[in-house]
Length: 472
Image (cartoon, rainbow, N blue to C red; front, side):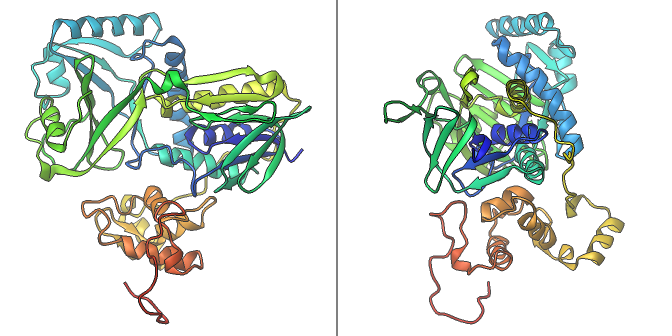
């Protein structure tokens, strides 16, 4: 066998599984088709950590509750941004009140503490900037926000340090069952293994009678919903301090959440096709005087309401499948990883890795350092004193470090996601070309070889003239 375990897909779940399994003496590889891991995490790097009180699905509720507790401990150990800030759901009609009462009763039945059904006065005491004519609220003090890309990278770095082989830029083409184990064919290699853990969002069917096909999971595809997001500048005066969700009807709601760094995120879910003005109109039903000048960025994203397939029915032959894009995927990822690790360790003859290192190499975020600490770092490495991203105060030292770390950045997008450079109010107009130069220097490549996010996204196609040096 080439490997004991092959993990297909390097998203947040794949990275979490790799981390958990690296605690054992397995020979493990993770296969990811993109240049980087965690490409399934939204670029704004903020996600809500749910407590299991909001979903109607009992299994997902349990996974959310377990996952949130595991995540809090993991983030503290790996120094990943995690803030417990609370979530306030508000309604303004009788139907909404009934729904909140049902959620409250579910939370009590599930034994989830810290969830309260409150009246309009208490709502405005918690969040005085809510604009709506609120009649009732459901407040959970357990809900938090996390930097999901930081968490996924931390999982991957620690797993890599403990022997997991990350094979990037390899796309899975075929899974074939053998007499003992499986053969996984990629666009570059063929590997034999005992166990396959498939976390790819679409389904790769195991080859039967010489045929293999790829398809979407139909029951998940049918439930896909679309969200529009507004990234709001930190200078907006009427921002909300808690996560606030207001439901207008079964097809539309607005959610406002603080970012893990600065500013806030407003999501709008509606069945109608919405423009920026439509999104602003919805947002201003919850908060006041939000205008175009307060918006840093806009984007759309798809999610599934309550759909995640975790299929271990074929564990006896060594195959586990996890598919779907559940809205709480970030929350449940640690729980799924722990569950899969327990299942595999019980099914395979394995021992704990006595040399397991459950620690991530230190990261210095210049904007968070005090004056004394900053000067000490600059004395050791002068590049920390050179600011590349003016908006978010990201230094050259941080960018160099994110390239040189285990599974370091190899693309502009990889640098931006790891450091936050380029996500300020200028949207990278000042620092983008500087990042390209640093990547070329650190990777020993020509600037024309540097890509934005994938092999087909070269930043510079060619030089007009060949000079010894290129200056930006």
